[in-house]
Image (cartoon, rainbow, N blue to C red; front, side):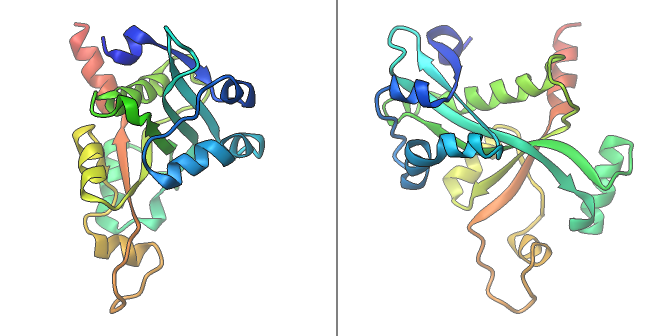
Length: 204
């Protein structure tokens, strides 16, 4: 059990919920701007859905918030080695492998350094493994900010890079050899089968 399980309630992040809540700040200007100004437009335009955990003792406090949307790993956008690895992992050759994109994940700055971000990721992983999920979902995908602390956070939560190097990702996402490699984000993924297998082994 973690802080979210023991002390929080789960809600869709709607206009009504935002109006009833205290201002949410995570300390990152881009994320703060999104959750203050754009989050409900994002849902209204069917670009994804946004959710939050609020404090059970004071539901006006948003402890963390995140967005999810449909995504996939496009096989023919990958180098051959990664393409072959995906085929080996899934035992199926497809043009796209289904996934869910965690577009934004933010933790209230008053609740930082408590492992809440990791708890939220685990919740999302388990959520999309649930029998209630109406479509298949093999991967959780993030376009992580290319910052050592952020990348380490996702790696500690089981995510791996979709491309083996920044140079490789730069070229396969539209860059040209010889140009300066400048990536604001890195594509990473988590294979939900890893969690499913682990849960199955723990229940034996």
